[in-house]
Amino acid sequence: MKHQVTNHSPQLPTARKIRRSCQAELYRTIKRLKVYISPEKVEEAEIIYYKKVVNHAVWLHENRSNRKKQVEWWEENVCDELVAVLEVDRIAFANAFREAYGG
Image (cartoon, rainbow, N blue to C red; front, side, top):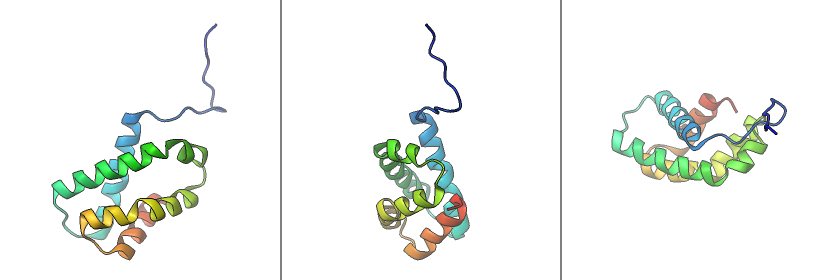
């Protein structure tokens, strides 16, 4: 018997898809800040962000249609660590992410 995947029961995203999404979201956020951040810092931030998302993948998948709730989770759990790594203003970074992510 074949297992069929339908749109009514979406699967968890793959690790590759999560990593690429994290990279894209962080890129769009940094772009909105209009400041230079070294590639080394960006790479370190991507790793931190990816690990956080993977650890909470089930919760994020369950709330996939509520971007506002996802942005609130991001601000509580991810933002401070990324601000420390990237050495940017927290309020500006959080606002840029909210604008880029659409929450």
